[in-house]
Length: 97
Image 1: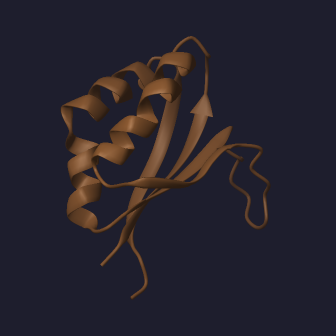
Image 2: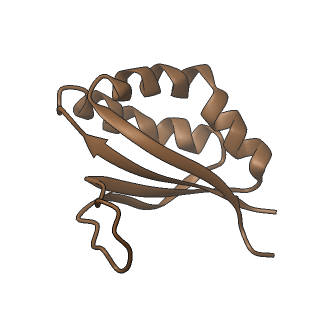
């Protein structure tokens, strides 16, 4: 069953962004993932929570691939870079059958 990683990001500085965004697509692809949504300009549809600066949805063939991506050395190195200038809330959910 397919799986999605859904994230919302607050950006505090932009120093890390060029390197991170130039490398992250290849790392996602290496783990059989693909971005379905990626970027800024979120718009509030319902609720009181503050809007993130950016959001993304990555689709994977299954949870194993998603977790393999998340726990990979390549991604964790990029995540360390990302954390130098942003905070992220991310969840893993199953795709409907």
